Amino acid sequence: MEDWLGRARNDLRGDLQEAHRLGQEIGYSLDKAILTLSAGALVFSMTFVNAFVPRHTVLLGVLFTAWLLFGGAIACVIFAMRMSQIDVAQWAIGVSEVLRDLDEKAAAGTIFLGPVRATRGAKENKKVKRMNSAGIWLFLSGTLVFAVFVAVNLTWR
Image 1 (tube, rainbow, N blue to C red):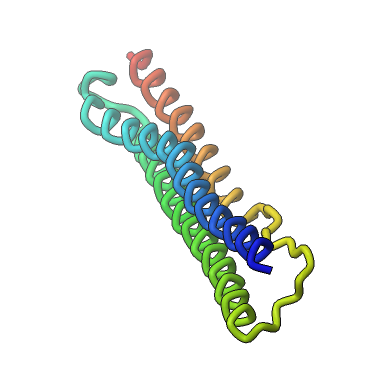
Image 2 (image 1 turned 180 degrees about the vertical axis):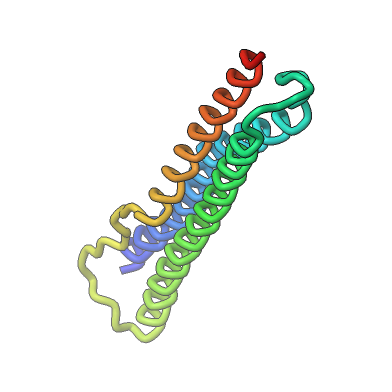
């Protein structure tokens, strides 16, 4: 019994570690790239707008639209990161509950002495996927709108 219980505990501990690692990795790689690019584009365009355009700018609303798109990309990614964090926490709580249940059953001597698969199947959070996709599209749209603004203002005479 102890051999099986020890393996089950190790599997569950591995799941907890994997949940934590995945949460960190996922929330850090894609989201960091989108945040960095969006924030950089926003700050860069605000700082150097005078270098891109002559004194009399045309279509200033287009520039403000680009800034809103970059800001929207940042907001989407922040919300997606928070949703991913909540998912990982719920996963860890679920695994912790299974561990606690195993410990209680082991202490009471009521554990079934057969193989148990104490792992969680992977699933995709559609809300996080939509928020990340929206962040990517908002960033790309902001880049395009800003490029149009610069092109119009550089060629306008």
